[in-house]
Image 1: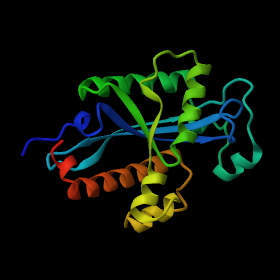
Image 2: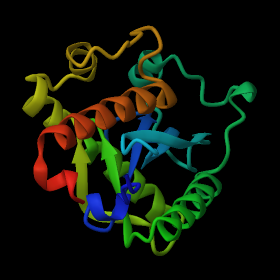
Image 3: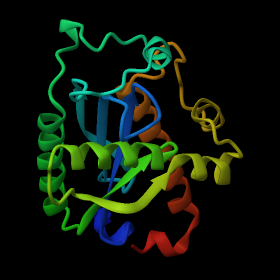
Image 4: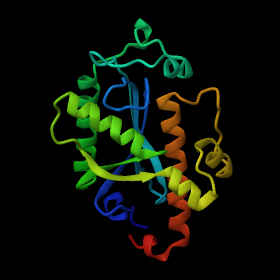
Length: 207
């Protein structure tokens, strides 16, 4: 059995699962505090699995709004030295380097953001990219793969915790709202949905 090519399965796109934690809901004014990204690929059994993980605690950009209610909800002190936070530009530059290498390795054209309510993550990523003056983001400008929509289709659930429960994927609510933990959970959900569909769809089996 030949190993499936991820570029063939997703029309030349490389799915990258992303979650962000922020100090509010406005991507233009509120700080980006944490970013996690997980790559996926097909294994030797042609099952979609998680591969490389990238995780950053991020310093609020100069003049950023830090909504007290958001910080309390996340339990984050943005200035705490043990966060080992880095500047937005350093975090995004490092992430983009890794993703561009993966795009070339898999012979893809561009990365596509996978997220739970993915538009939120994409807008914060794009706003930070623009603030930092970074050119040529590897991510598609407007297309995403949203596990909230996929969860509604497959499991009748749009809330991440409920979709995970329906998919029989363990989820610890005490660890939720950490970008890394939520990205890991979202990546597991995405892989399970894609693998389940591949098993029943003759068209994707031949990709």
